[in-house]
Length: 390
Image (cartoon, rainbow, N blue to C red):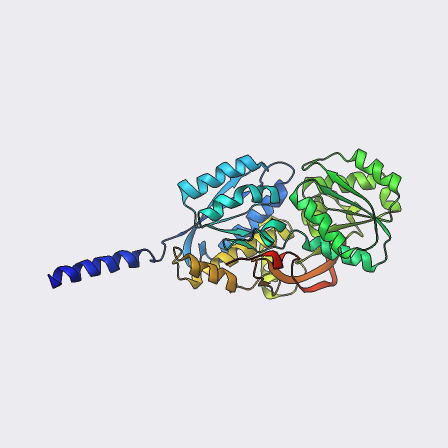
């Protein structure tokens, strides 16, 4: 009888132990915008993410990495369908890649309900920073307001008195307006909301001309920003009006498409390709070799997202079923970021520095960004006090 009980006890222990055994691989569902006007953003995140895995020998945390890539087509309903597949059929261990906040808000709850960790390499909606914060959501980029806050402070400090704001009418665009106005205390001549994905700005430019601002702040990511800058300069508005943007609308993808009209534009970022830390030097050099272009901030965020997953899987020794241990490992952030030091706040958003950049020519004659100085040091988002994460 004792022998039978011992056998049963050992069998039970064996079953219990198997639930926390190390996984044999890491599966990542990479859902991003890979077509349409916002495709450049998703492509850069994907390429940065894949480069990090290549640097880790095709592994994450020492385990073989399987990355399943899908295009959300910038449509919430498509994102929801793919998310369901990733969770139920593919049974991914992590998800990442979403560019736009409306997509993130549409896909988020099923991900969290399934206890799957989402590592955001871009979208940082205020909802998930505040009262809808979640232990399964980590943002390795920024909270949506942050880059706009940095521009607002710089524009305010430089004494601009009448600024027109332009952004798409979706959650990220609304966060942009709020962030800019949090630190800009001058007159806002008008808040102009455009359609998400809009490419023709004739009506908006006519409105701006009539308002005669001394500066325009715009947040129009991807193809939207490319067209806006081209049309703004072609309309002659740049002669009397200074353009300002967050890094999203003045990064290498936009510069490559627009060229000389970008010269002299100021923008903000938490990262720049001219940062001199060893990790960033390697990342920038290898990204150029691999893809034939300078990386954007989106690529840097994709790279860091992979490194965060890598560090967490390594720290838990591949025991991905132990969700509490994985969460603590993600919170610890034991990797060296290409942006330098940052830490996670209690809402899983970064506390980090933000910089001013200006677009000019480098020593190779390329039109690109140059870091000018620090706007914020160890800057946290404005919503963290609303987060009651347990």
